[in-house]
Image (cartoon, rainbow, N blue to C red; front, top):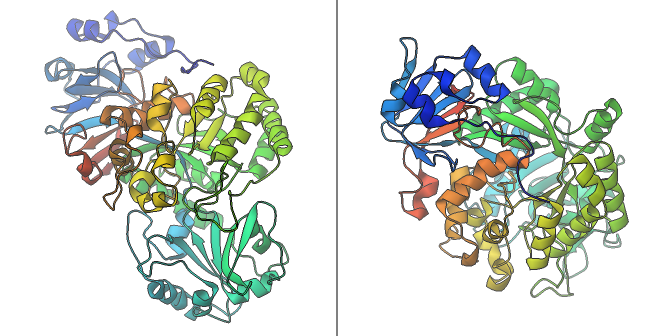
Length: 574
């Protein structure tokens, strides 16, 4: 299957309009004609900028004209300033870099957690904490929580602990014996519980590991506090009371959605693929004028069922809020937490352990077929080579439906690949979204896998060389969502600890930006709308105080976002 946007791009002859000084000289598509008719004069001119358009027709420029929510023209300062009218606002970029707005194709917008729960680690950057600090933060929450209610901690990272060890049940027993307590690893595939929680769930040394999950045990065979993947479901059963997590009220969800929208644009993100979060809250903040980024919504199973019943599928919506793929359907475990399904045992594992498989191949095949027949674009979470193989088998067995519907499947994470998997990904037309910020943030975990394996992990170079428009997915909260941090990692393959892994997978700065912009738009079949600074496309762009192409590559993440514009409106000013 060829990798190209399925809808025609706007075809503008830039130089002819700029020389003629009139919009009448242009050959417009129908959408372009509507733009010319309603916005013959620019509302905003941004000049004196280093414009990196991500458009091969005019890769670099100095200025951009904007009419309404669209890009009107791109060119030199003189050409663009000649379009100004007395009502046109002029913005001197003072030599800053102007790029298309960044697009993150997979993250979890956990605003409710950020605003309301105990944060035992730093959501946004590398920071080490002690186990005593974690215990103290949880204990403070317990001191003002009625006995019997859950104490919830988030953003734990087992390799960002000064004690150089993970949490245990004994640690969490220090928090409280009167409250059930859990701490979730920021990767989302493992949790840590205290004794009260294990008792509430009825889990003892005799409880067997469920399929696709593990209960960690100490030298005496007793549960040590850690559970992974499907074993976490033991704590979500109806019999475990009170509930481990409380569904937020709509009011709380609206506050969280507005908070996350502001956080996204603060880092230069103008489009985000939401996995989870409240769709109703997104609709509400849009009505309130507080949705300042574009949301592509990945629907959870219950919502998918409702959409199917209503005859609604992927693509429904508009440029601000659109139904995207399904939420990630699990094939296997986690890369950062070392539970992804591999074709070989993990190094040093005793007994040999090769990761967790979430469900049978038959179940995955049936799910993909149902989604495609219902008009929903399927999205499978697959990290290890075994998990990716299973996802591809499910897609390949529905190849005729994919070709018929045009619903290109998605592989979220797609971490550990090989040449045959890459060949099959291209053949079926699947869109991979590997982790980006992991390359800087999680480099301290790569030693668990070793250099040879890391040469085939997060394989941006291999995907590009194969002609696959790989896109960016931070997977926040497992990884920070700052695009510039992700770009630095993709370019250098060097982590916060100064160690470099899989340098063969490096990409150039220009390629990393394209992955974070145009490829992100293509991933949702919106390359005709956004992803490059091209006349006719949405005026989503970011101004950076320094040019990522010019600074030292190990400083890219430190570049300041000066301003973010969505639809031609300033939504963040640094």
